[in-house]
Length: 316
Image 1 (cartoon, rainbow, N blue to C red):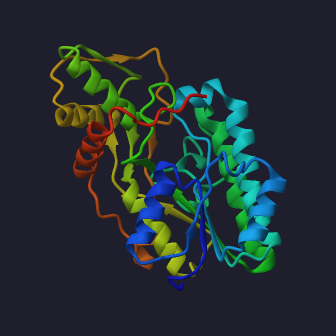
Image 2 (image 1 turned 90 degrees about the vertical axis):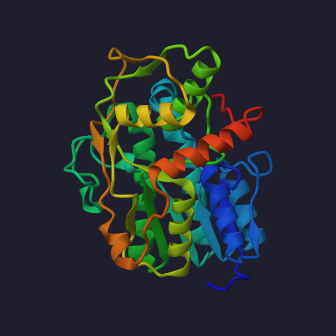
């Protein structure tokens, strides 16, 4: 891929899109384009077609999505399925119709069945029921994966899907109603520490196991996919390592410096018991994560402290 290739990053102001933008800039890519949601409504098909036809990007990286944790998925199922399908379908269709050379679609590990064997292999897709608490988002992302696969199969185009595990890092969403587990814990423990080390109540039993990937490593995987023609349509992106939610909480509590009690509210849902990714396909091609969890949490908390007055809070 030429360093002057025009690359459109959809969702470039989000945590993932922003990390991809920074990583590409650091590697010398000089022709990056992005639009805010106010400048371009990705849910509007005609706007997207017009934008892509005018800009004529060589590559589209789809890092745009409506995202959130268990609470947000449960409370806003229609927005999670419809808006995500609108965003990705408009981008995929425009890329196909207007002959964009390369399309990289970003999804999530939640596309896999709730009780699939561990670790999760790419071929487990559509082999069983989804986790009910995020099936709306998962179904939307599955349609994106299958659309890219269909274009690749029928037209031979370089459309590839990357499925990351749980992402976290700089510019994360720390709003307690809509954030994922790791940034929510950082905020809860920090505020409890500031409030005299008050007790912290967390959802569920603490027993589910989760895998976490620092967002800069995700960005590196996208660059890897950009610079190489990957032989298959779907690849898992992760560390290949997981821990219990209880262990995560204790790690974050230690980093933040909170010394109060942790209370587990078992009346709240746990979600999928385990979600560990099989990342052997990407490893075999030459990509591997670099940032381990302890370091990633430290870097994320430091960013949180530096930006505490204007941390991203998404209100649905």
